[in-house]
Image (tube, rainbow, N blue to C red; front, side):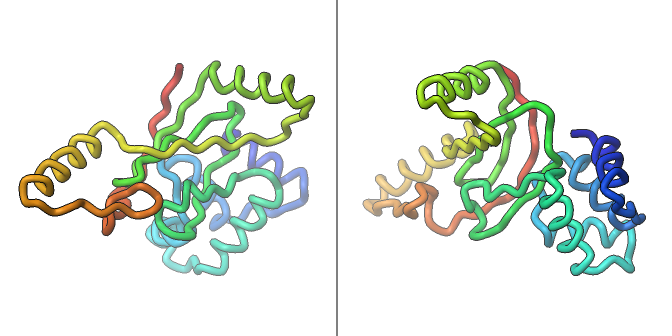
Length: 181
């Protein structure tokens, strides 16, 4: 859903679109990142130094309750963080690197086929579908292979966390890259 559609939906519901709310909406939609509330606050504060955290949290709650943004946990890559994105017209899957935190979006017919298959098999009406796939991006696969080789050469086992990511690694960045099938 484009920012213009969200603005129209807010007006229909009688919600005033303040300058600060508009800044937050545009950041969520246009940064190309999946932002958590704190990062959204930091970016918004650059545009409006008077903006405060309470406004960010209230706006996110209002947008989420109105069905205008999605709140994602993205495999809890950074703990219990929640990330936000505007509701898109087309369903997509989030492909998350468990090592660096890179998030890519996958669009395409395979997701629609899976949805139809689930509906048919279970006689189920799907209203909402969220798909997350966790693994290692090509770059992190190379780094992991190098680390495992170095650990093997030095006779040290490389420990992994239960989520499958090497211990002590965190998200370096989150980007949104649209991929199609």
